Image 1 (spheres, rainbow, N blue to C red):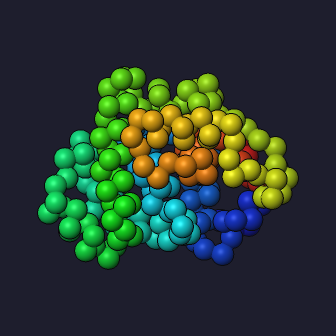
Image 2: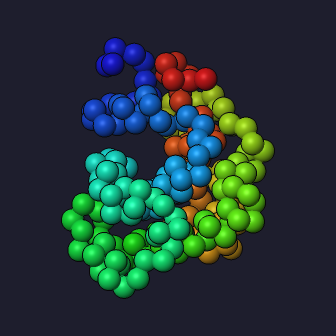
Length: 186
């Protein structure tokens, strides 16, 4: 597993290597997984992605495996339990953001027939394959992530700034930013 050429950001931690090799840049069309990734990218704000990956299973258990219908109706007792859960980032704004995102997700899903149909419109339904040779060439935001962020915010989503949206696009394969020379490159 360690002998293949890879994007340099994933070296140093086994969890990063697995994430890079198995998920990052792989197109996702499952609504629940898209919702999970949007929430987790928002949870990362101000933290490292490694922190979130290390807490991912706890997030899944704490948030009913990202079942938006269940999350959308969380009451005060559930919010209090989440804020007391050491397995997740115990930030009131982020916990409340997951709940607000669940509500907005369900409305968007209903409007478009699927969240997948809605979210992939920002790349015209196709993966944008970039040709970066060094990580420093990779942008933090793009016109597509700006448009996605603006529209998600208008729909009531939280923690969906353009940088978070671009990271989400990379995570869900809407964008393939594997460097030229990386074995995972399309």
